Image (cartoon, rainbow, N blue to C red; front, side):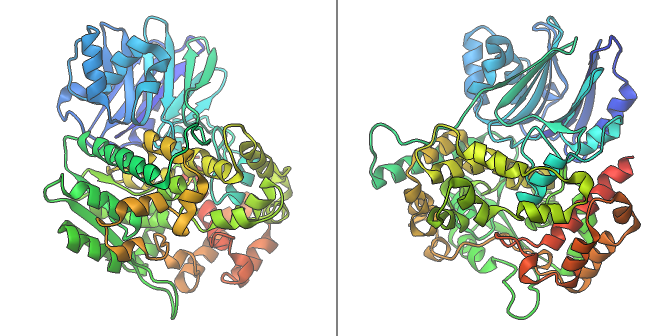
Length: 596
């Protein structure tokens, strides 16, 4: 797990190494163990290392194989690297290190751009081919590892974060209205290749890009998710057995690919509790970590899930760490957390993950997280609501998921950022693509391949890597996702959602955890906005920088400030619209304005 950056010039000039150093410096928190750089004519790489596999200097990066004439920078983990290494050795390749980075180099030499199809893992990497003077970029199937880039007629720059690209300078930071429309409609999600900034793009998940030294560019999608039923009908028992087998194998892969201890982020929900149950017999002295926050007001939702996580800890006798963070600290640390978001995020648990990761990083370098299970196995309340809704696919999806109607988007931003109803067109296109048997198949596939990438997955990467902590997500093992996508949606949504996981967990996870109502990583102060949090957001939205920016319509801002907990201030999935505006403006002030 690391931070990567680089530049490829198309104009016969060499990259400015001082610029590369500035970019690399912005990635230092992602890789605190060592740093390195490499240059070759029009190409330069920068790397910050978090040492997880093969802790020796032989696996430091940029990694150069002079015999193969290849150089690499890599962020992530290849979970099946040992099997691939053995296969490559049988083919005659000789290795000088023990880690997964060198496996990528040899695999690229052996199989070219199709090497990614053999990788089980999370990854974003770049390979410089010295012979052909071309750069190869790749991103994993679910975009677990980020890869941003800036492209113009003279050069391509790439990095693990937007902040690193901005540090390089020369980036167009004007707003992309299409990106803004997605951001305000899909609670912060802006699907690749867009971001809210015109000059910052991101490589799509399951995609590779090849760029020559002359600027010729090609892209290839190397994986798609099939959400149709198999030819041979399976019983409920068969599906559950298959789920148990594949999930157990995925957890083992995620555990074993590490030369340092692995812990678990234990929220108290089904997903993380199941990870603990599957790991406990294989890990001596398993470390687990939970976080909670203060309740807000009388009768407000509970701000911790300790009553459930404590039951899992008691059953498996893990070495548990429990943190209760006061709201005063949350408020104080909010700007710091937002500064570490590669893109503005509005989900309240982004800040929760940031504060938890700080504590966890003092104990371990690697943790498993339950992110992805709700999307893969249908755990959210809006799925059955959509299924029960009448009308066309877009109407059913829009009513229960969009944060704002198109009309409200136009009422949110000033005329300079008005556009057509582009998010509706995006969703309509995704839901109509072939390879599904039903409306819910299409919804779940869209969620797991697109929406999840720029919401929970990005959130976990950004907030943990800000502390040099690697978070792994076994529920996004692509074999497990492929299996779940073939299941009948009604099986997944049975018993309130995630039925296959509940069936696997029965007998190894406390029944109280399995049968509890669906919970969320709670941080109520960013949902029920009042008191000091309200004044904090008011100061941001009334600031000179916000007013001068001219992004928001003032009457819309004043309406939300006047009634931050009114019915119209909440989205269909219970996000607070005032926090949405304040989070975006704060992100712009902390990242874009300061970079300029």
